[in-house]
Image 1 (spheres, rainbow, N blue to C red):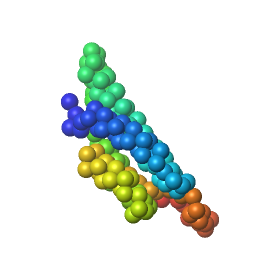
Image 2: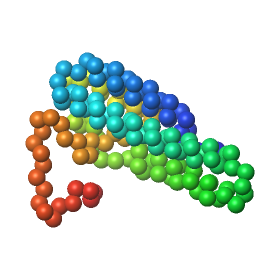
Image 3: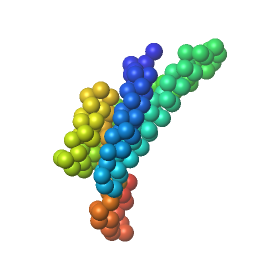
Image 4: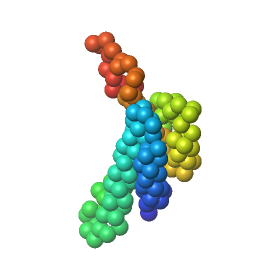
Length: 144
């Protein structure tokens, strides 16, 4: 049905999420825990996206009303079209914020990149010990 294997992506992301949670148990400070928590939240958000895409595919496949076929097909198309720009491209790579000493987390990020092909952003990530950025009144954080 879809050009994107959302079921496989969902399963792999769920496995990586468990791996991140297990790896978090070995964290020695708040900064390491915050990085693991950030990655876990990113994976949970991706899993939610994949579930919604699978639900759209299921609704399309199980549809018996020809009048709804086009609208349901457009739902599936939406997930296929937003997958690459929203999940595979971006700026503010999380790897740039992970210290070299955290080799296990670097390894997980590398495997996520290889197997899922998704980009894990560090946009708006503030770690313990980081100074809070001060923006002028005219600056809009949400703009690219």
